Image (tube, rainbow, N blue to C red):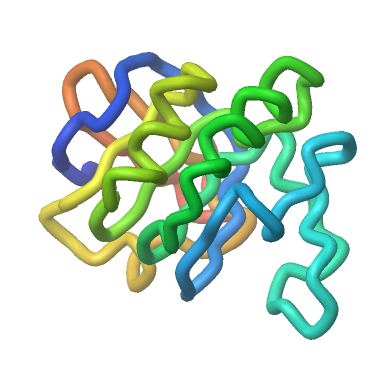
Amino acid sequence: MILKGRKVNDGKVEGEAIVYNGMFSFLGDIDPRTGKVPVKGHALEGKSLADKIFVFTTGKGSTAGPFIAYEAKKRGVAPRGMICQEAEPVIALGAIMANIPMVDKLDKDPLKVIQTGDYVKLNADEGIVEVVKKGSPQ
């Protein structure tokens, strides 16, 4: 399946998707030392975003978030790429500061067509997302 969207930050990456149907902030929703979600009761509690293609709805602010994104990237525990329904300015800045390829405003809702475990090829330069459903040959 091929999806087309808008480039937020350029780059080409691929990997396993982890999907969260909710808003995300690098401040508090990820431990920049481990890449794991530390929030008790969070749908992704204890899961690692490190080296994953992270799919979510949108950001939820906090101007400190981009600095946390940068720290996570520097430590090698940031998401490999990000896809969201619509990037608000703070999450977009986090992707840019941490140099994480990111797209938004896809022609199909990514939360409906991408599932955790799917293999995703993200070409943010062109705004193209290729999804290989888990269990399908790559």
